[in-house]
Length: 153
Image 1 (spheres, helix red, strand yellow):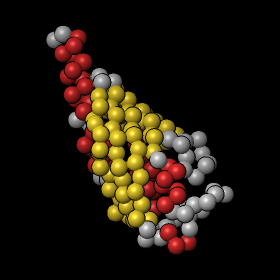
Image 2: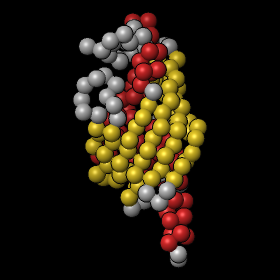
Image 3: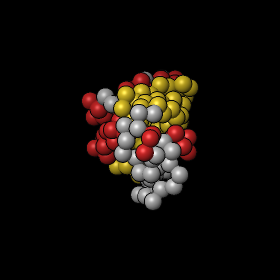
Image 4: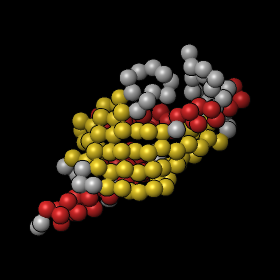
């Protein structure tokens, strides 16, 4: 197989990870062990202004997904652009929407029950057929504005 064909095969395999990645964020945690590397690391700006913005391992990712689904009931992610792939990376643009269920620091008292919509772009490093590292870029300002957050304590 030529180097070009090999890279194309890797990119094609990486593209196949987009749908299960979306399904995982749609709360199908049964996919974590199938598509996430054991030493997975995620990088994201912390929404509450505290913490270092990293998530480690499969359990850390599952906790993150569970947490966002606790705050936003009926949360649903949709891929709007991509997958864009190379032999090492997978990139998708997404849109999400759900209903605020309460529990976010600084949210307005009347925000509960409010529909929330936001977007983002995920850049993922693929190693040995598994998602190994993740850089999240979400429209956090839009997210907190919809909850009526004025300042975080």
